[in-house]
Image (tube, rainbow, N blue to C red; front, side, top):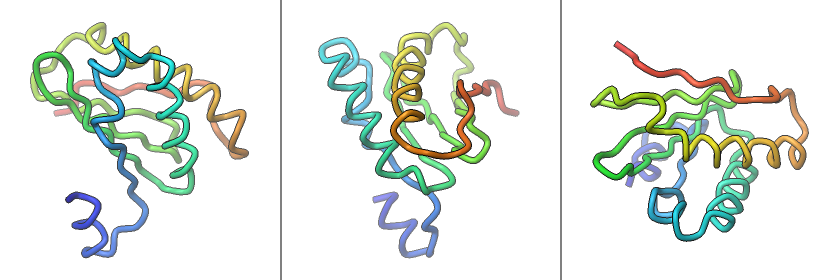
Length: 119
């Protein structure tokens, strides 16, 4: 629905990742397939400015906003959980980012920066 809303508002520089493809359950059961999905989704949307990933942790939803121009991931967490809560997903993101950088030419940083705790 968010994709359709963005298109109606003529916002074309924002991409979306299906939360059914990247979540805690998929990461636990199918780590390699989840990484492959993330690489594929990043590669398919590499020309976008932002990519939104609603991430379902074990207890609530968090928004991971990939800012491809700044090579950062902003973590919007309403519960302000510790950064270590997201270690597992960031291990996945780091591995996927490494593969993505080698598949898509561009001015990518070696590692994605992470930003937490927004006012």
